[in-house]
Length: 356
Image (tube, rainbow, N blue to C red; front, top):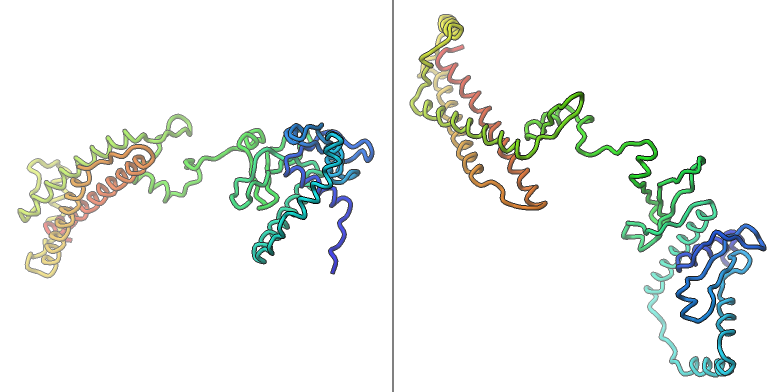
């Protein structure tokens, strides 16, 4: 079944797109005959190499410029060369060996690639006739293989539209300058206005909190400040851990020698209203076992914290920054875990001494 004939507009669009992909220039001059089709101009390098003037043609009235190229080339050659050209071409065509048939798979790939190129050329040509502009940059998608981007037409008010598109992968891009000029705002990934409470709490836990400065202004905590705070927290918790371990190994937690009146009254009320469990009772044994387990956990966390703090990150560059951030996060998690264990140990010891 023969292929359907292309319309005149489709043929013109295909020729324009084909020669623009070959490097020809789409000028702002229109054909003097049809008064609607822009003229195409040949690259200067090709004309200089062949020693002739640059060609301009109308895709609607002239079709492809092969005839103009051949006539200008023959006119620039001497008569002797004109006479020898037929015999030379005949000799060349008869002396060349016949080419072997190509592989069918390779031919099918070439046909598919040619069809994709024709579709791309036709799409670009149609968009150019609608007022779109061919840009001087290619599509960043690696599968497009150098397909030029097309810019959108100007807005009704005459301003430039910064949007770009690729007719092959149907991708869309917008320049940052066009976004700002259009009254829109680029939101950075570090903006916390849209964060959930859980995400904010996690950033506070990792030491990535922001400090409020003035009315609604925020400032991210610097790495040096966070490192200083982490060191202070580490030293404080390590000291508390060691003191708690010594008290647990002795078998009991001693009350402070100096007590405030409020603490005395609270202790007396609790002692008078609750009875401490017997150490040999099931509850007393369970509390003792819990204290021992928590003491072991606290000792392991303390040893891990000391070992981890003794080897700070020493990397530089992108890798060093990533290692430093992970190190601070792990250090913060150690300190938070030690705080939790200390709180539970205090509650267990209070139950052993005062009861419920």
